Image (cartoon, rainbow, N blue to C red):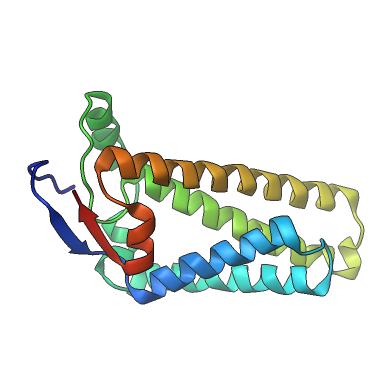
Length: 180
C-alpha cells in the first residue's frame, strides 16, 4: 500500500486498456441481462456467453497482464486484508494504487458470480436440464446476488472516491488515478 501527504496531488497510471474495456463491457452485458433482455431469449444467452468469455479472458490477463492487472499485485491475502482493515478501523485510509484488499474480494466475488451464471445458463439450455426448477432457481438466486453485489460495488466506488479523495469511476475510464 502506498501512502503520501494528503495535501499533495498525485497521478498514477493504473488500469490498462484491456482492464477498462473488460470492466465496461462486462457492466454492459450484466446490465442488459439483468434489466433489459428477456430471460431465456437468444440475446440474453449471447450476452451471458460474452460476459463469461470476458471473465475468462480477465482471469488469463490476471496472470499475464500489466502490473496492476495481475492478481499477484492485489490478491486479498489474510495479511493484506488484516492490515487494510486495521488501518480503516483506526481512521486511516491507505491510498492504494491498484485494488485495495476489500475491492479485490469484491472483484473476485463478482467474477465468480458471472461465471456461475454462465455455467447455470448454459446448463439450462441442455436437454438434460431443460426447465429444471432447481436449476432455474439457482440461476435466479445467483443473478439476484450479483445484482445486490453490483449495487454494493457501485456504492463502495462512490463512497471510497470521497473518502480516499480519488475519482474511482473516472480512473476506470481514463486508466489514471488522481488523488486530490
